[in-house]
Image 1 (cartoon, each protein chain N blue to C red):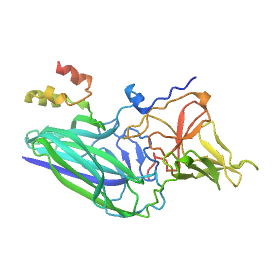
Image 2 (cartoon, rainbow over the protein chains, first blue to last red):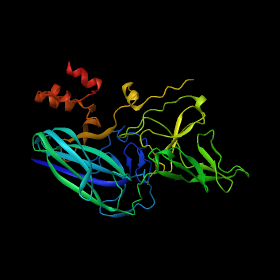
Image 3 (tube, chains in turn orange, green):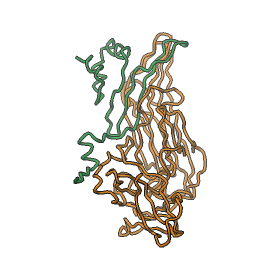
Image 4 (tube, each protein chain N blue to C red):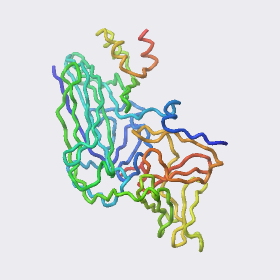
Length: 309
Length: 89
């Protein structure tokens, strides 16, 4: 008869869940809509939880953030809390499962969930129960804003019943070349313009973002600075070189399954087509507009969220 | 068509947006070293602390019924599958 308890933790740039959803955390705009990484299938494993692929574990490394901007996510903490009993033994109680992000030893994210553990093993077999949770962090004035040692600390405390405590598992990562999180004047919020061949805007968090587009060919002379939305709901602009540039991605807003993210598409109708604004919903760092189908679309200067980082 | 844009709070009240999922739990059992693993329970945890039971096998139900705490265990969930709910009566 035996009881096993342990924690496994990562700091990741992206994941692919067992139900086939790929999401990136590295370099995406804050709080993008995410599909339900936990939906569908019953494909869990003791080693991997519900993720079939974990991309770029940053634990123990030094990572330059020079290519990112304030308003971008960096990584997620991903934790498995595991309890196993064998040969007729049992475990009953409530565990308080902590997940913390730290900067130079001080918490800036400190969250927990209560989990009810109630398992008993068959006579010569075993039964195990596992919790998996995640928490992102990004470049923001109260999260990652300076070069320092960052990290996660995860542990379980016994809330009631049998001893469900599991000692802490800590992972460190050194973030360097962290971009300034200084904001511009709030009176500039909402400005959109073409600079060189990029589309610039001041987002709702008062940071200037610059979008690089895919060159679609010449738009003709005298059209520099024009901005429009095509019938496939992509945002376009004409650069200083008179070429038509198309935004690299757009998402038709959907009800996200991720913390603090988007609600359902408001679908205001085609009479609003062409309306464009810097959005004050969920991440507050993206552009939003209404496509010719009357739906709300979002785009931004960060990376597309649904490909491997 | 006049737009009716909902705030996240209004959408949540209308049942269009649920509090986000922050974790998932699964219970797996195996009768012996050579027998296959079976998932016998699965639940999701939302950011407001609510828990939803999304799957419970008959053997897991039997385990709690034998212990006499089936109803007490189920009480912790804010949402329960129909096939489990009918066993509560």
